[in-house]
Length: 218
Image 1: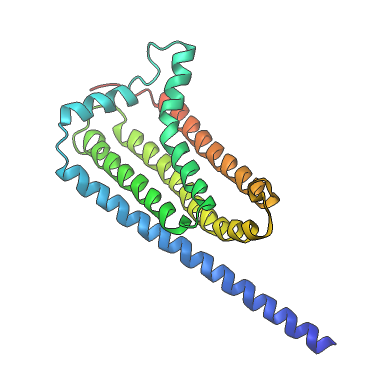
Image 2: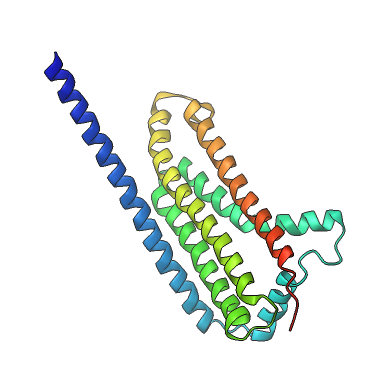
């Protein structure tokens, strides 16, 4: 009896270790994939014909007066508008878990988000670091980049959760006539809401610190 217990314990530990290694490999793959996507966004910024004057106006309005001249309702709208790309990225990736193509579709969405982020970071680097146009440009750039990298971690989490849930949901679909209202689906919805809320919180914290920097045009 003792030997059987030990054998079962060892087999469980081995399965757990294999599972942990698999998750680490998936996370590392997504990090590498995200890095390549960011580089793609950088090259897009080189070849896409957007004038520096246009990006300067947009960047200056963001870093030097995001809430300037806005009433309470307009401030809320501006905040929602700023958070919405991150919110929808997480929401759409997690929603892919309800499809049979979650692995591919979630990575496509992740790729699109990171290419866009690489594009933005490239322009902001030129505007804030290479040819500084505002005070505290370096701090503003670091703050923005850290904020978005934290959100990228949330997206990596979302891709993995979406892929895992798609298999669980497919299994439930065969066992239940209403799998969407099952416990597994409800947990996935709660995870989606929590992750979306996390990105919103990070963006709010970012805007608070950005306003405290008090950047202004040189």
